[in-house]
Image (cartoon, rainbow, N blue to C red):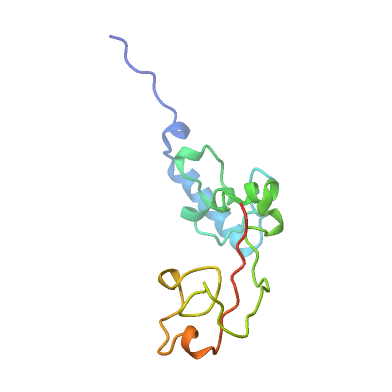
Length: 144
């Protein structure tokens, strides 16, 4: 049985005392602004004040030092897909505002787009059907 070849210190993650001291001095010089900041894969400067545990990527990402692993993963999808313009759903769309209760509307709020059991408003003491006051506008139903 052949013995295993000796592993280098760099591969095993071990550093000598002098190497560790030099790395520490370089890190302190970067924090003081005396040495240039380290750069990531994209060429962007890495802030030396960011802690090592945040700047180091997880072992399973096969990435060098940087903050690329901290970015939102679905940003790429939004730039390419329909989410790019922020049109996931329309906000604040004005729809028909009734002035009195209509037959077939929600008995609680008066909107035509749902029934009383599906209403998201709190139950009123006097329903919209009986009071004819504060009739809610119909919700905007976006098609898929």
